[in-house]
Image (cartoon, rainbow, N blue to C red):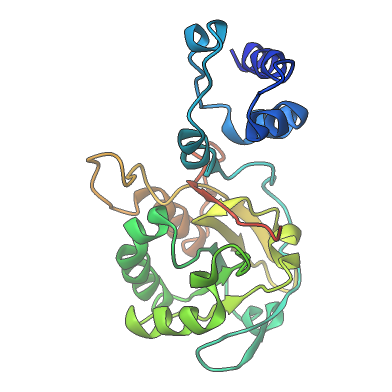
Length: 249
């Protein structure tokens, strides 16, 4: 289905008046397929010369899964500012903890908004049990100014974030982690002096803004329970789903 979609898009580009966004999609079909493989193009419309409405492509194309990072991955070092306090946080600040949860979130994403209050509840609960938690926003303020540091500070204060909410202006940290979407969860285990090791890279739970499934935090909380009780974390993990990280243009 995905291959046929790419061929259909290439066919469209031979039409002289093809829209620019479809010509761009055709030239970068590999990227389109990797990020929007769920999107189903109406082939009847394509055969009759009609085009897919651009608005649908923009909305659907933003939906991305967390993929490409293997369990056992070592947490990369970082040094990022916390807009609310001005403090600079480093990976080594969490070395004394048995586990570290790194979350890539932002202000505007509807998937993050859907979970935000429950992310705070889960963090408060497990931080009392010894879990270290940090959130990072890597979105470009050129395209999404509402995700900038000033608004991050307001967000952290408004929702009483118990964890530092850090600003990755260069987006280098997101790249180092292999982050792709918001929200995205990386749970690391600490074993003595060994570096943090990734044991969970999956979803919060099955709830989405578009479904009626209640938010429970089941998947992530089960993984945290296993880590804090020194039990193995199941390796079959559902990817997190959310908005794609907004890279600098």
